[in-house]
Image (cartoon, each protein chain N blue to C red):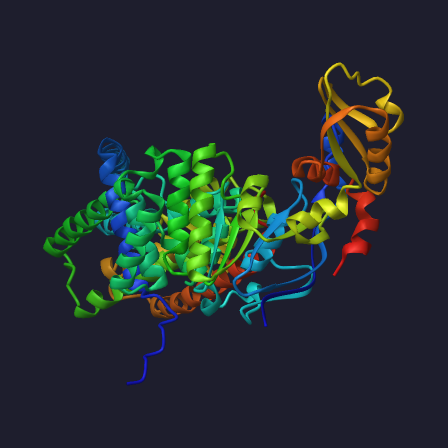
Length: 289
Length: 336
């Protein structure tokens, strides 16, 4: 009987499950910390909901004829939480640690393993507590959709395509943010240290958390162009939220091309981040013994 | 056929030359001066399968950099290397499945989790069959006597216990080539001894090839038949441990046991007097002059016992490190 060739690649799914499992074991070990993290991020999210609730006491919609009224916007906000919490649970702790691994030379071990280094670096830890906001996001979206569906005038209607498109574009959004984050973290190879990761992240995601119509005026236009076509953070939440909440009914003519562009942008971002990651490894010097 | 073949391997870094003081720091923002550091220069070496080779050299000599180059963690500036037929820095999975690197100063196990969990992760990454995994793990934990500690979080282990766990993690996939970078650093004598014993046994059993760097002469004396001395990024010596002394120490120690009432006065005319603790006297003299000096001394003094010894290895090595440049000549003589 011929001997089957030795498998050269690990099963990535199994490795990921082991990462997720180990992270959970660790989180459970420090359960007070786990609870505090979950509660504090939930409170921050709830305060945000409250804040926008108050804003909508003063205004009916964001901009005239944009369709972003209270519950449409709450769908948007829920989508923001869903995307951010996925990024924070799976990628944020790892990107942060990537910077640290570069600075301390711990990256050595990751590079020795017979597995794709970017995979290993990007997914080794899961911050389970961040998923609390995912649940909150889903709840906000569900309640808002129910409100939209029950209103008298032009009620929201469920379309089967949404079931596919919404998760697909959530995934695109996550992929774009992930690419951005891993690129920022990889710069530590050249900068020696990069503590501005969180700051950058905050500045940039801040642009993504509002409907893009906000930027469609005056000084906002250059921002709109830059953050759509150069660093495409504006499409991250806008596209899935528009697809689901349908603020403009019927949809505007530019919405489908934008959705198409988002797919391309996602692919472009992933490829670019892979290139940056590989180039960074070439320059890796490994810290003192 | 050699399993590791290194030809003219070089690695240099450009580092920012920082000057002292605030003003200089501000100037440094606009105009930076760089300096090239040659961590490894023109190193050539070949190692046969089953050899246990020690890299010896002062801090910053390029030992670790060489191991990192061979592990594919960093890219060389010049030269070539081949380990088991692979070029390390291509980092093929097939190569990475066959070797391991252990660094005494860094740990790869999850700090908060029991070592067992990290081992399981390795099993997944290296795709080790469950039965092989269990038998290897059992064997290793038994040899290192850590079976009881598998389920204790790594952060609660002592340094020695942690090092043993690091070794196990590195050996789970049964590597054919093992790079050890100061595996016993900071360990107490007992733990050092345990790890030495383990390494010797394991290497003999499996016939694997090991490159080791260490500052402990005992490690090296216990384990390695072949020693490569590196200073300033270049190989200064390659041969047996005894050869280090032959090549680098020009002197011998002559220990005399003088007869009762025999004074040590005047011995300094014949050789350098190292110590006098009557009736014992230690002289140091040039290798070439040993017989002549000894003959004279024996003639003029009443001596009960005599022995001629090499100076202690530590001393030779320390001299060697201190006079890195002065050994250039010796290199030419001993280079093979």
